[in-house]
Image (cartoon, rainbow, N blue to C red; front, side):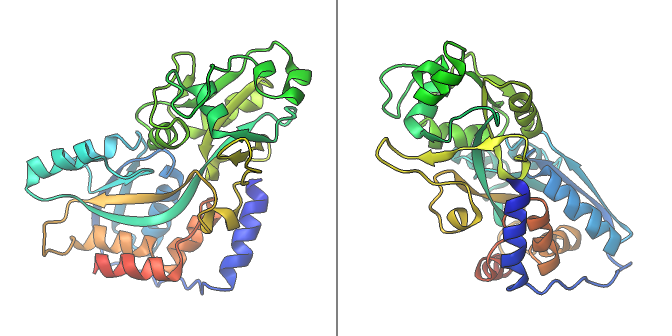
Length: 313
């Protein structure tokens, strides 16, 4: 799945992006710390490595402790950049504003989607939001009347393959933006069941499904590989469903599409310091957005990048 998606992205972006590497610059120097999203960590690390190659005296540290850690790090002045796979909550913004007297500044740097997947041996191909809610949620706000604990309760083909085998539900822990977005969008804002296995990283969720035929999981699309089978996601029983393809995500048809963000502490009517400004500008450049595609995410459109660059400048 990831390989097919990357090829499609590459074909699409080669027609609209001219990738031009910037020349090395020894004048930009200093240290920068990015704290936040595990989902975005591989991308931010890739940006950091290539940025350092261009600016040998600029050193960037990336800490992938979950999206919930980004607002705290910014409030405590322990990070220059906070990466998040969800928007800051109203409470997080209020806490920041109480400390500094103004809200944090947000930039969209890439597009992403949460993909639900099963083991390749699983005959299941499609799942509804109500069924996901019945598997993962204790509150079932999306319309399911009963909880789903066994494969026989979910799908006839899955019943034939697994019978009374319990559904092994795996996902992210509460520090993750992916956890929070899945809770809001797939569980209708409800609460997770206590028996859901919660992991601190996307890779662990994928590994759980790879190792267990009876498992189901969700993760950012950049972490989904050919060892698991992505599911078509339907909003209701009558809906044929939407696959997590590039075209569907870009067009906004896929229900669990999202943006990736970076937040900074920038006082009103001020520009950022040179190093964080240059790093975010690099992330929004042709070269930086080409790396977005290489890491399995989705580059911003030309108009989106222009608007984010204008906000940065």
